[in-house]
Image (tube, rainbow, N blue to C red; front, side, top):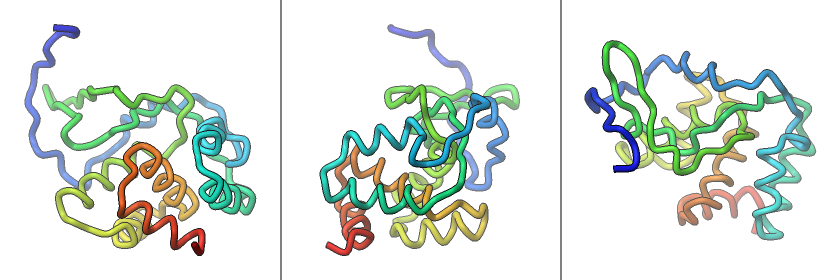
Length: 164
């Protein structure tokens, strides 16, 4: 065994979970998108057509986003509950220089895509209506998902953004 067994139980975590504990992962540093280390990393790992999409998004943004420790695969099945506390595990996709909102989006993205069979546009509508997630961050998240998983649903969505 590589790590100690995590006691507790994996119960279904509600979709309207309070994510207050994610605030502890902030690193008190903000960047505009075209200077954010996480987004710079996405650019470096993208094909040319995808770089064009990323540049279009980040060059049109003036918003600043927090630098955070990013779990990378924050999903209902990577959380244990014990003594009224949440314990997060499975840090296989951990990013030291992450961007705020990606873990939050990932939780709902996984839940809605895999458990409720929602399409990307439906997922964004839910996130925007309930939490006012910026469209630019959601689009960058989909790019990150595509680069990580090479999913057909993400590719179709991104091709729509690129016009190709």
